[in-house]
Image (cartoon, rainbow, N blue to C red; front, side, top):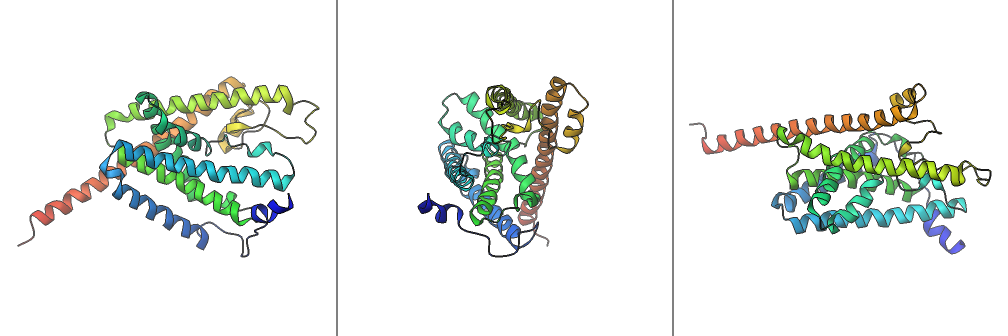
Length: 285
């Protein structure tokens, strides 16, 4: 254990705590944008299915590797497994999906998984990369690195797939793109809810749980307070099945807003590109 302690948990952040849009945050935003542009120009625009699968699988494998490190870190630091850190939250699911989707032979299933990563995963990544303050509370260098590498990767993967698969480019395709991703999301959340209920009755809600651990996957549970501002307030007022449906609808609504935002950006970029092309073809006399 002592041999593991220094390389795993012994590196403390030597500077002042990172802040929103401080040098550390901006550095990662620049890296994220640079990598996204490079991959989109180098690979995504070609829309080669084999290359796309390799890129997504590589990111999935990378996320698995750094998540294994984080799990080891928390376990060594606490001296036992910390169930609150179990990787099955909204930001964790893209790891599993990116790692397995390229291996799926059934194209409809793979397509639904890619749409989930492209829209749902992008939303989660953008939310943290835009306002990572809550992730800057640790003193450990490697966990701070993990946080930014993780969420920047989600943004990169999402934008890569949007460019490669030409998602959010046709208003008529909105249901075909949001729908399959929403199905994947519903399955993921339902699995989390079942696991939370089974885990609660089997262990976490029993006297055997001497450490007071809890299983709160996807922040959806009949027993624990929902941390999301509006949903948290509604949970206290509504029967849990009704709250569960609102939980699903709230995420789908957020995804729909993101879809239209990306659609608008694509239209604007195409408009600028077309005007630039025409000006080059017809230079002013």
